[in-house]
Length: 183
Length: 197
Image (cartoon, rainbow over all chains, first blue to last red; front, side):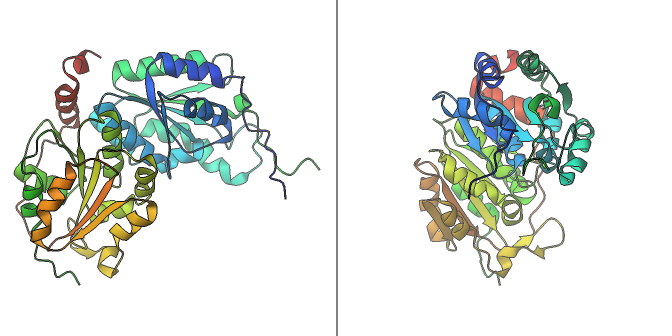
């Protein structure tokens, strides 16, 4: 049985390379992630780089604590997750706010534009409010052409002001996921 | 039933002898108070919250500072909340990270309710199943010196469960300002550039 083909898997060569280049230029060396189809290309670029460490997590909150420890030790991280993972991070984000620690999270959005799965809607719709409630600055991006510049700005904002910053990659930017063909 | 006679602060004190450059992270609650009763150093990072995150914080620190040994002291309840971290640490394989669980089989801060380790959940066995090649369960004081040496030995990640008695210890508080804890450790590890970065 073949696996369903997802239209959501960001093909290499659209924005992944440009965002990876920004992470390199900004000296990001640790990339913890819970995978998402939208992040696939970026994850693969990071995994192929011997000077970067891509760390698979069992839950997104692990990445918050990991990035905090790494930054205390002098290493910058960018955390990759889907919007559903934001809910898993809530209490752990108190670490960043209390200690004024920087972090950039790139969050691929679900539960909005063109979504097919009703179970994704509650967390997707709550994502920006939840992040802001926990002291995370939010930048939403709809245009893939603007994404590398937005990520660069997020890194500058985070590391210059000791703030956690989430860049929300909208579902419109990524393309809505479809399963099972059209009827 | 927990019949250990090991006293948690005596255990931590022995494990921190001849500490050298050892970096110490603790989970929230008793292990933080234990550390504060023994040490208040720029090489200490006691967490006051972020339950379930101590081992991952230690992993981040270990990856960023590969030439320094890092030990995470935490409790059984805190470790149980972040069990997935054991698989992430085992697969990431830092060469300088130890996790020491001071296991009294209780949620000691909230009325000594049983944790799952009281019912037999074996955190060392969980760690082995996750791929930790170095695990130990310590029940006797005579085993502490060897564990202390192993915290400095390097190699694959180490998980040690130390079964400790249920004790009532004076509450000794570490600094509670997270920005102070952060800045003093960064300055100690990274020098002045940590402040101007």
